[in-house]
Image (cartoon, rainbow, N blue to C red):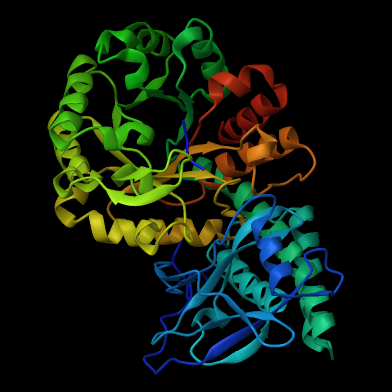
Length: 498
């Protein structure tokens, strides 16, 4: 179905300080060293191969260091002897984002040159600068969370990061800067993950945020059994997101009556999804609203409706080439998803239910116009936002890693939507290793990685003032009943809340 703060304040040390108003130009030459931390320099081809993981493609982008809006797609090019990757600075300060591995798996690694972005040409040891910038943001995250009780594991990882950064700064060769820089990046990633996943449930519990602990149901064949399991895993904060699939219901709104009743009987609240992103471009604006109306009217007791799913995916407003890649063609302007969202949000609001819109997490993908924050700024005007209660992110870490960037992204999301609550709206880690481009947490065991993804993202998403948590594991019906470790990963987060 899917394609491949205590008030937490946005500190200058977190998202970055506002770039100075000055002329920006020049070329930044990047020296990449191996991700194993051996200090072996990678040529341009080897560096790109590392970024691609086991099947990805170009994902590099220049960003506004504060808003994370995409300034330029695929800026890296190879030149010189030896061949090294480099980028030209446009007429403004920019940060560089790439997919890069650490010992915790792949992350969107954002190198922002101390927070202000790059404004002049230079030669940079990527691993060292990435670690320095990540450590600065970690310091900012700690400063914004003075009530965080540091675990022994966190303290150890932080000390490891400091030791290796000091070694990188004291090094007399770029090889050693790259060696210790990568090791520091590994340790910062570990510390960052521990901070977010340990703090999230503690914050939500202390502030009585009434989170949504969510699971997604897109297969009704076992509706007699999944509500009981969903209740066991999520109560007293349980939500199920029921996907109303046009290929299954053929427009019959009664198709889901038994499933909704079963969820209700288990004490679960429901987020209804009238149309998954896979099908959105097959509906005109009028047809889209008609479908939303029919389901909202048929199920007036459903608490929340997702009026747009993965709305900035290029496949939502465009067409694909048959292999899942967008081919550049767009649906007619009147039928663009932004108009469909505006109509549907206004209707759901008129019925008194909560309105949810889900963005797809991506930066260097397809084109800048589809990048998460670019699309939101361009396509969700104030007239639409006033009818939106919750903005969520769909994230599939094997397709578009977040990792180290999680706190940056969640803070940027709250800044972009100051009047809405936020959450993770869709999450999974694919079982099919042949389609997994970027690994997370465990490179050799997808099951272990999947459990760690669930445990981390369910917990980390709770640690923000306007976050509901969410997560809404996509393949709940297919994966969770047969994996006790995955069940434990989800329930352990709920246990920390209660």
